[in-house]
Image 1 (tube, rainbow, N blue to C red):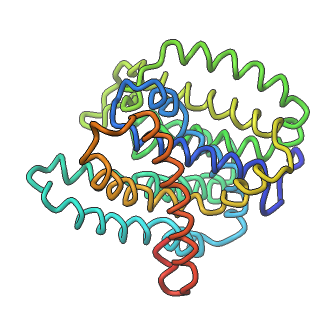
Image 2 (tube, rainbow, N blue to C red):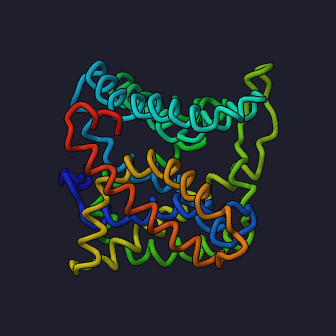
Amino acid sequence: MDNEVTIHRIEYIDLLKTFTILCVIIGHVIPEMNNPIKTFVYSFHMSLFFVISGFFFKSSLNITCRELIVKKSKQLLLPYIIWTSVYFFLHHQKFDSISNVISIIRNLWFLPALFVIYFISFFAFKKLKNIYFALIFFILYIVMGCPWGQSVPAFLIGILLNSKYKSFNKYQNKLLILSSILFLICLVLWKTEYYYYNFELISLDNLEWQIPNILGIFHMAIGIIGSLFFFSLFKIIYRKNRVCLLFSNYGKYTLGIYVLHFLIIYCLNKIILKDADNVNIWIYYLASTLFVYFICIVMIKLIHKNKYIKLIL
């Protein structure tokens, strides 16, 4: 392979993870769908998480299928079950319709999605072994509208970046320029509601070919292009100063922050938005994002002090 990355922690990627989770937080702090900040972060933020996850996938091929399932169940599924139960308890008054129940279950959708994509990627690369068979498998998985298939291409881009890391370093400036141009063009056309569009070429209801949803394809494309832009940007601009080192050090808490931030935002809204008329909304968005971020870090550090309780994150 082309100089694959084997380093356990890469500081600029940890900083990139911090940036991404801040985008996730502010996207959930802002309730208005057409807010320009929300529109911007919704164009790429979850795709970027999948690219980063794919970048570190290769080490999973060094363990058995059983070890992978056990490891990822503890890391992803256990926190998902525990914290989804917590959110059920907090929103118990909203169980008046199936849509509200589904909405709560989907709060932490990234965790089961990443679990499934890890598993199918492990199967494709380790069990099928032939790269062409693996490629056919991924294409079928995506076009048939299988669970979270929309996020598979971003995960595969992360795997590719790792396997071609030497080439990425060589052409990072050109990649930054190209991706920035394409990203800006896409942003002109992007609307927040497009985030909820998916696509499938084969309907699982009747197994018939159908015209793909162009907005679903656009959603996938802008996410990948934006992810490549920020991946290249952070690689180039990263410097070992105090601010970068501080926030890159917190990159290792990203998964825990993702799980906890819903809870902190819920409590914050209950306290502050009761008197919303006296709050400058833009100051509230910015201050709330940073407050939620650092409170999550404090909570994670406290939780990690107990070897049993830390299993929930």
